[in-house]
Image 1: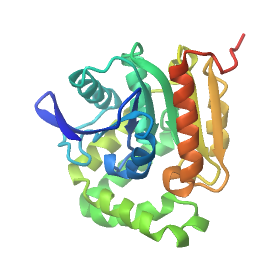
Image 2: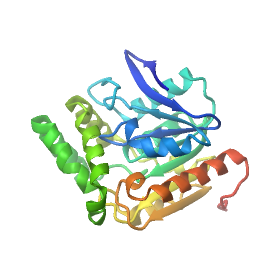
Image 3: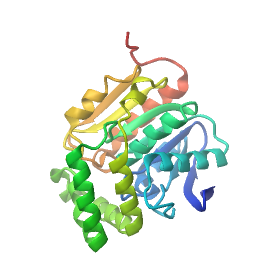
Length: 274
C-alpha cells in the first residue's frame, strides 16, 4: 500500500507492506523506497515493512534549502506517528543510516533495533566537506550526468558485468531525483555531526552491514564502530561494494531477518560490554 503523511507543508510518500512486527527501511542518497523492492518482497512475508521517500527523493518534494539529517528524521517520525506505530527496527542504507542515527538521537524510545547498512556515525572530514561543495557545483550544471557516472562506482567493479540490470534500475531511480533534492541532501550530509555517542548510549541492538569492497566508506573504519554499542553485531559482505542489497542479496536479507527477530524476541543475544 502506498500512502502519504503530512510533514510541514509537504506530503511524505511511504509504502506499507505485510503484517507483524515493523521494520522501517530508509534509503540512501539518490535512492527512493523503490531501491528496496527485493528486500520488501522477502521481508514482508514475516514482517510489516515500511519504506519512506525521504525529502527531495522519490515522490516526496523538497522541504527546504538544506535537508539536515534531523529534518529527515522528523519526516520519518511524522510517517510513523501517522500510522500509529510505537516500536520498530530501523534499517538505514548509507544516507538513510545517517537519518536513522539522527532519529535514534531525537526519538530513542520507539527504536527496537538499529541497522547501519553501509553507513557510519562519523561526520564528514574537512576534505570530504570540500568535496561535497565541489559536487554541488557539478550537480547544478548537469545533475543527470553526475548520477549516471556516480552509480556504477558504488558497486564492486567485479560485480558490474553481472549486475547491469540492477545498475540500470539504480540509475533510473537516481535520475528521478530533482536537482534541488540532490543539493539539499548534499548540504545536509556535509553538516551532520558525529553520532558515535548515539551508538555508545544505545539501549537497543545495533547491526552493521559492511561491504569489504566499499569505495565510499572504508570497511576497516566501519569495523571500528562495531565496538561502540553495548549490544552489537556485524556482517562483512566480502564481495560487495556500497550496494549490498544488490551485490549480496541473500546475505543481506538473512542478516536483517535474523537481526530483527532478535530485536523483537526480547532476549539479549548480543554480548554486553562491561
